[in-house]
Each structure stands twice: as structure tokens, then as C-alpha cells.
Length: 127
Image 1: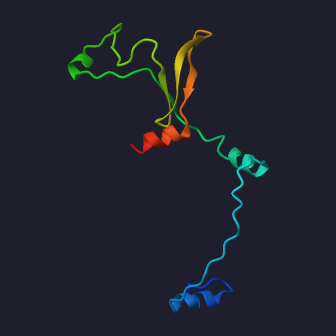
Image 2: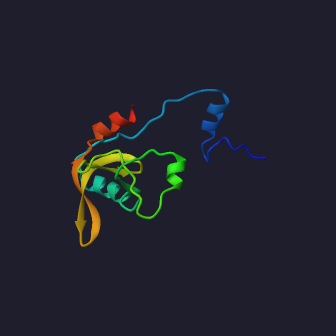
Image 3: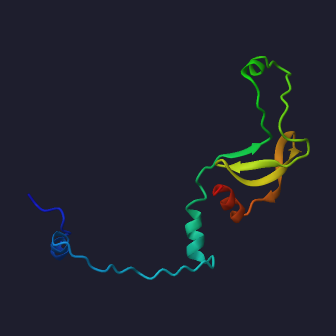
């Protein structure tokens, strides 16, 4: 049976591993250039088609099951925010912005009024 610890043509690596020897790895130089050049634009293209869940949270309510089961058509649920307060825009359950409700062509939408900075998002994640 052949020894699978050796790479093709690399018997010295297998011998070094068997003897418990180590050797220094050599890595290519990382440029780290964030100028937004063509290579970075191409890398960003890879994530454009990834689907995410966008949720606009109008408000929350806490109620007893008794009250929940008594809800009927036309019932009103009191939410924990006041009229006119900004709504939270969540992407994959992470707050990214706040906005206000608008009506466009008989459909509801949200106009973004504040974008959460990456620093603020990290601060909220670390809590």
C-alpha cells in the first residue's frame, strides 16, 4: 500500500513530516491596495448576486395569548413606537438604516433617512 503523506515528487516533505522537522513557509507578498481598482471591482462583482433578507420593522407588541387569540378582522394592535418615528431597516437581522414610510403608486415604501455606519454596526454587535 502506498504512503499518502508524500506529495507527488515531494518525498522530502513526507520524510520531514515523519521526522518531526519543520520548515519555514514562504508566502507571496500581499499588496493590500484598497484603491478600488479593477481587481477590487471584479472581486465585488462576486457578491452582487447573493440574496439577502431585507426587513422593515414597523414596531413590536407584547401580548398575552388570550388577547392574541381574540384578535379578529379590524382589530388594532398597539405598537411600541410613536407615529412619525423612524422605522428600522434590517438586512439579515442586522440594522443598516432607518427611514420613513412613503406611498409610491399605491404601494408602501421606505425613504432612508439615516444609514448606520460600519463602526456603529460593529459596536452594536459587540454588546
